[in-house]
Image 1 (cartoon, one colour):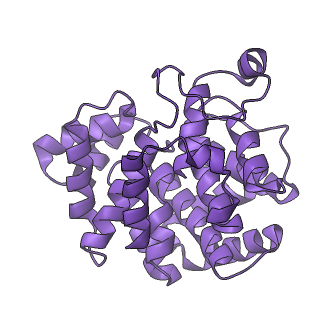
Image 2 (cartoon, one colour):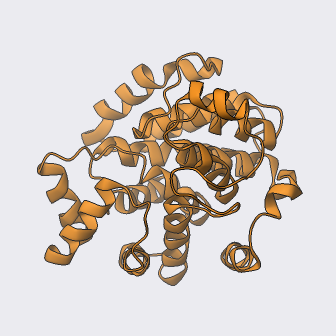
Length: 293
């Protein structure tokens, strides 16, 4: 996930055509981009994912409060790359002191809250919660800390279910997807069932053929999930991730979401050593400490 973030950050906000003109095909972690990053630097995608993981480790039964504390610690450092929806919720939280009330208030004020800021940080939930009903609940609680639209939580849930299929050992990608969708329909509550069906049957139906022609690397959570799934046809971690980030657009988040999925499928040893070497010892220690815990 962190590798995908660091690779894709260089290309964020560039169109696919601009990526091709400037880089041909970017295959190396080179930094730069609109944030002028050093090679190996990551963005809010990784920072918020680490916050989720740390919060779960503190209190897996009720992780919202510790996750929120980690979010605020990061926010107080004045990060340059925080998303508009998340920034608005963080500010509203200072007034309401309740994450879900703050997110709902921002949503009702007219802010679009089906962005990919929840999806980008959801991977730790797939490792922590094995029961699909509990996984749904936790995906919803954590997504709705900032993104109130049910599409945000539903894409998180579907993504985590697919991750769990690979953790169970399913190697056929299409079979894993179909089983994840089956559980997704089975465990999504009735009140969101219409949204859930529309999301999969209308917006994600094409991915079973793993196409690329209609991909849109936007900040919309469903578009990001579609990009990750459609690029997942690759034969290796590297091929898959390179394909994903070179779509441009919200390339760091598409890279992070794709990287998490591909990492689970192919394993840590599949990550090119030259990419891992771009992380500083402090970054590597932080990742390894949380993963080991």
